[in-house]
Amino acid sequence: MRSLFLALLAVVLQAQDAFLVKPYLQLGDAPRILRAERLDLLWHTADREAAWTVEVKAGKGWLPQAAPVFRRLDAAPLPAHRIYRVTLKALPGNASIPYRVKQNGTVVFQAEALVRKAGPHRMVVFGDAADGSATQTAIAKAVLREKPDAVFIAGDLVYGRGRAEEYRNRFFPVYNSEAVPLMRSVPFLGVPGNHDVPFAKWPDAGAFFAYWSLPLNGPALKAGDRNAAPMKAGVHDAMVAAAGPVFPRMGSYSFEYGKVHWTVLDSNVYVDWESPVMQAWLEADLKAAQGAQWRIVALHHPLFQSSRSHFDDQWMRPISPILEKYGVDLVLAGHVHNYQRTAPLRFQPTKVGKRGEAVQGVFTVDEAFDGRKVTRPKGIIHIVTGAGGAELYDPWQTDVKASWQPWTKVFVSDKHSFTVLEVEAKKLNLRQLDAEGRELDAITLTK
Ligand SMILES: [Fe+2]
Image (cartoon, rainbow, N blue to C red; front, side, top):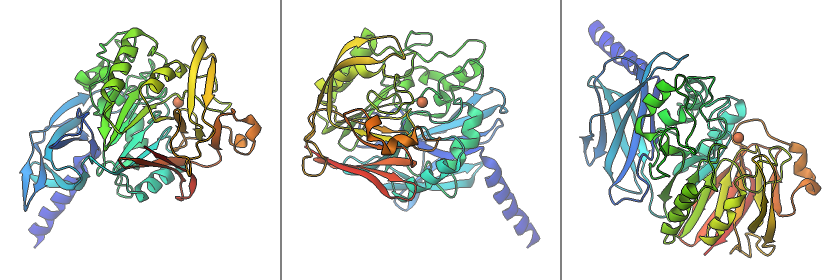
């Protein structure tokens, strides 16, 4: 009896000890909807040998997956650790598939993975997220209650400097906890914001490239390129090694979910979206997406918004005519810590200054669209959904409409919130919910 107890205790202790970060799902390098779907599963462990296997439920049995591989991250202040990864393959779409992870032959983790859907689905979007606050956790819990199929974080993924240590303390314990078991169940996607770039002071900054696994179909950037995230030799060598081939390409990419084509842009200051190489990729990506029912662009820095804070961070405005030309329906951004929605807009830039200076131009505003009776917008609706956790900006503006730009229709900066997109072939519902699930805004778009 005593030996059985000790054996059971050993299994429990092994399970507890197995992970520094428990398994979490990523889309991996799978931009297109596939007949046999796939998802990447990642987890972090101490830097020591162990035999890992992953199995996926198939019928009554368990199907072993390819052997997990790992890369090592040895960047202070965290001790060196391993980032394991395996691609779960041949998954049926529209299904929740049980999977389990074994260490040295013992099951140490089990969950269900929600596989990408080809049809109707629910995507949750928010930005400016993991600052370790109570509001971050409250929003995470509210997101869980909405039962999303996937989650997209619109930049400023983790505060204050996108460091591995901050992911360990503020990101994974909130979005992949027993209380909020989101990341183990649905894929998280994201884009780097200004707090996620490789700050030269911190060797563990730029952890986005080591910890996320996203499509690698973005502009073919190489380390040191003008438009690549500026990892610094002698500072970020360990981070570059841990990132492997995904650096620097993973900053921008596109993917499909249901009938939506998402174009995800790294809008940080080191990227020049007016340069021919970046514009060529953007045009080609949107052109190839003309068969999609919906087109969404997601990035950190908004093109159009009304907050006094970050008002002059308008350097993404010049791409508006390209997005209009290819029929983009929505632009989703963060950076500004509140919720904002514009009328459908068209914009022709006339004067583009330096970064941090206003970009002037001519607006054409669709005043007829109301998202209830008139649901076919003439132009692009710009959403700021940067109220996902971090401290709110300019709450006083919520009730002072005179402080809004003329094309801003909704501005809520006195509550943290997130966006729920319910997408069908011909109908897209956008709802903005607060931490209690109360609706702050709701519109419908139809085709
Ligand atoms: Fe930001």
